[in-house]
Length: 261
Length: 161
Ligand SMILES: Cc1cc2nc3c(=O)[nH]c(=O)nc-3n(C[C@H](O)[C@H](O)[C@H](O)COP(=O)(O)OP(=O)(O)OC[C@H]3O[C@@H](n4cnc5c(N)ncnc54)[C@H](O)[C@@H]3O)c2cc1C
Ligand code: FES
Ligand code: FES
Image 1 (spheres, each protein chain N blue to C red):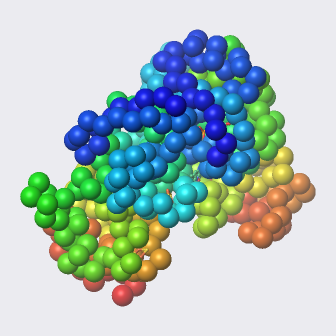
Image 2 (image 1 turned 180 degrees about the vertical axis):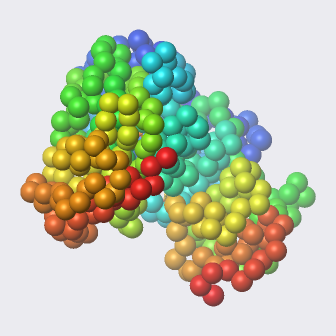
């Protein structure tokens, strides 16, 4: 690891000010960033730790019935909440218990790893990402592998998710990394069905619109009929070909629909 | 360099650290607590698991400065007051839950975190909880047995034996 300074502000305003330095970077739970620093793939001059900011931790519900999760909330707390079981199930399978005790939802969505779990749920539910300066719809936020709408130094302070009537996340784990090879989040809400797919595409997380349409009329695995996810633009690597990932998308979508609760 | 203070195994300690100093390096190099091991240094293996404010974390994936004011427990804090092995440690010895012993500190710390939340875990729950703790020697069965024994449960033959 290259040397850097470390700051630990206790308010969002202080953190935003500290991040104005050109080569400053936010530190969430460090479960992605610390391995990245060790591999010398990032070289910030200063890390601004967000772990001392209590205002961005915790889970509540707003008047619209959305689940509001502070950006600094750890995976474990999300796994233990009971208001949104589909999301709890997703969080409970991220990494392992020690990763879940440190890693945060804000860090995960800001990083937008093409195999990260939460982005699939955020797209499927039509969530809103709240930052220190604005609110961004999930559809506009995720812009391709490791790319988001965030500006330099912008902090994810909260994620607001409409709680679906039924939902489920199916993760087909890649056994070495334990990230999903493909993961599918299905959410059945008042306005229709959302299907978010992670792990599969060169373009990062995406919505499988054809399946959303088919399921909105008839929320059962049968409704997928002979619909097939296209292999165009999907990731093909030593762990699975693009065609295999396309196959998994359909199978996991069907399983998520059947398991949705 | 900046100063960091925390309690480690009940004792107040402090030291000078760089921003990049990992908690595991502070524990091993500054505090001489070499029981916490570094197996992979890539956040995969769990040999470095310690408890920070009661939660199991990978000490190779947390900066020492982030433990400011925290209560840290390492494997050295798991023995009884008279120096004899704690219940989980003794169960690992009794049930041959270790061979080379390299993974053992992390296994014991993860087991302790599990039993705190779930005093009577099933075999399946134990295996699931240890997902982030790798052992290259034992094949895991005796580790699972040791944890079942430490939780005071009958030990049915574990799966795949
Ligand atoms: C062994 C292992 C297995 C894992 N398995 C999975 C898995 O199955 N599924 C999965 O989804 N993830 C997995 N992860 C990743 C884990 O979920 C990380 O916690 C997460 O991706 C990053 O969150 P963090 O809080 O640790 O962020 P950090 O590592 O601290 O930061 C990641 C990036 O986000 C930025 N950042 C952090 N917080 C914020 C914020 N609030 N606002 C703006 N930017 C911010 C940082 O600057 C950095 O660029 C795994 C990690 C490990 C080590
Ligand atoms: S040394 Fe920390 S996880 Fe392997
Ligand atoms: S006993 Fe050798 S690695 Fe587990």
